Length: 85
Image (cartoon, rainbow, N blue to C red; front, top):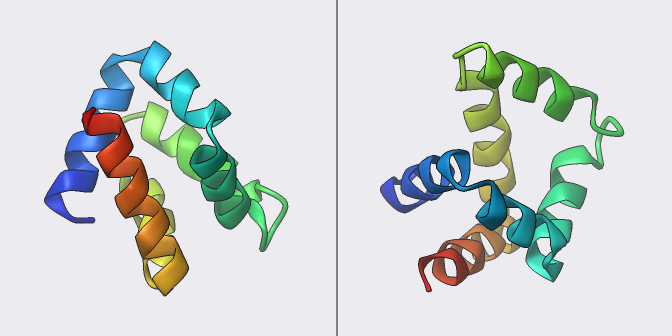
């Protein structure tokens, strides 16, 4: 994960309203679809549980997988820019 994405994750962890805004946005919905399309969300749920226990490595891996595609990388970039406003 790049530095901007890491900062975004930290912002979202400390600002539930920002997270809710992201999840209700078109880009947030697209991100959720990308994170859940292969296994109906099982990996995302497991990664989220692991992150809550203090181990974000699975979540980082999921985001990195999304960012491997041009569409995923562009989506994460748009989210980063939108959240910096």
